[in-house]
Image (cartoon, rainbow over all chains, first blue to last red; front, side, top):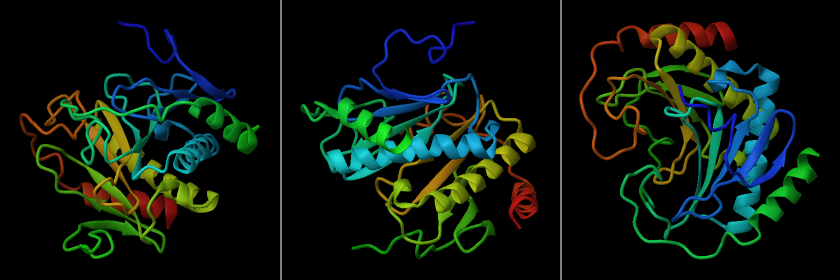
Length: 136
Length: 136
């Protein structure tokens, strides 16, 4: 059985974390500002969390989303916890742009088109500042 | 501009609702138990909700997920609010099975394979009972 890549990450840009979750700026070619909010403990499903834990996770997701919207002015945000292949609870928080790799289709299409530029510059710092401001 | 299909639904199997959100059992060929939790008001993004509203929505999502897990014993659950084409806040809550139409890939792949059987029978009633029990 392969080691869980969220319990044992090889390389991650962690922009903020507390004892319960961490926010990663992902490197996803064709997309800008794609973040993952990862529950630190190896929990499988969202509904495995109790109300307090779930509220905290979703508050972090919401702060990340709101910051990306203010920062990048995307056409739409996508929020998703899938983990079918990596069953360790994490939410993708993905700004969508008319020129991203699969717009307006879901990002998980196998065929991606086009590419995007350098919007990513400085996002990690601005996310960190927003999360520290909202959550400490 | 086309009317919003969540503000003006043409046909929906609503298994439960309150003033803030409703739970729909979707008809998605190749998938069983696929639900949508729709925010009643025309809100665009998750982060447009305040903390109280978001906590309520995610509690409903969690009850739906937990009920589907107990009922169907899926391999994994997927939870996603995308809405790139339909920007009215709704969460997909999707049980994944080894024999579903795209497993283990995301459900939004354009090419779907296989098919599934009649697991869907009775789910609406059991979801309604679980939601009324948890949320009134």
